[in-house]
Image (cartoon, rainbow, N blue to C red; front, side):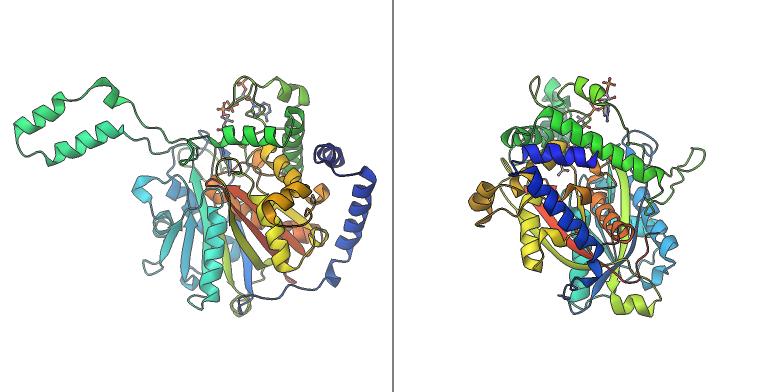
Length: 474
Ligand SMILES: CC(=O)SCCNC(=O)CCNC(=O)[C@H](O)C(C)(C)COP(=O)(O)OP(=O)(O)OC[C@H]1O[C@@H](n2cnc3c(N)ncnc32)[C@H](O)[C@@H]1OP(=O)(O)O
């Protein structure tokens, strides 16, 4: 299937010839076998920052088993799961950084609330970051920065998203009236305000998965992006099916060792599996109606990531500290970069900007990369990014490069599925990408892994992880 997809994508990405691709692929597999001979990347921080380990709750389709929880409870599970998996004491943790996108108003600093709920000392500081779908990447790199600055040694970075319950507000008119009512000094003033209420005051404001500056939903933007890069409906469906097949395969082989079981109050047993992985047929996929641009769009419920609940957490520290604590790290966090571009026409092109930039910064070639873990917001968005990376025109027009960086080898790309199939609890995805990278590097005997993701606001991240000599895939 992977090679079928490779061929499809080859066709759409205008790579000059299949023969050229096959040669490149042969060269890549030789490269992977020789990974230990590749030069290690230099440490940029003076601290050799390592990813010790990480966990995530199973990612569940929203409105399923987690529906009655609160987001900080899910985050609490990820913190407790991390402590249990690593055997580290709470007292050793200097600082907690957590990502979240759609905030529960009562727990806006969700990192702190989750830590208190998990029984951390009230002396352990915690803050919350938000950078849309790359919020837990931001949590990780914030931790790297704190360690590099010498401020702290041991950081927990994570993220949580809970789409089963999002803040729904009164209309602006109603909010204004309620606030003025609160300040009214006399019964007459109150009565006059109440008399001003009109039926339209009761229309609620629902949060949308949409871009504030353009008002466009992510799905609508993905549909336009797919059209702009000529990614057909069939290619998008093929890619989505690949994602589900790869995830189902990895799940059945027990590769998702970052999963921690969650006991949900009032339910028998524990939740221990992602529940959005669904291998269907091309015929079933072809029948689905467009979800955003109707009736001619190509993005459907099956080739889009679905609304998901989930949390993740990982342990980041200096290599020396890990050694002191007797821990066996999984990977070095070698390098990272953030990119930002036009949030209207290039909203979801983060990887096409981030990947060339991080490779150049690290002095690595596409062929040096053994695993790719790239966030799948939409199949059409992935196809557009692959095409952009394989286009001289895109490189010259937008990247200031003479030539394209080229398309990554799809045999090394999201081999355990991705956000389309595993799910995408926005702020929790970054840690999943990091742990899949670390574990795949061991299973696939690789050295370097690249993570990249797009995010609302037209931003993106790219990171390079290098397998640690002590790494295991458990
Ligand atoms: C940077 C970023 O990451 S941006 C990305 C941010 N994320 C988003 O924007 C989320 C995008 N996704 C969504 O908003 C929603 O998942 C939507 C709108 C696409 C779909 O929502 P819903 O319509 O509620 O999906 P639902 O699960 O009901 O599926 C619709 C239909 O497709 C079918 N379907 C969904 N997935 C599959 C699949 N893999 N195979 C076959 N059929 C499927 C369902 O069975 C259902 O069929 P039915 O109507 O006969 O029951």
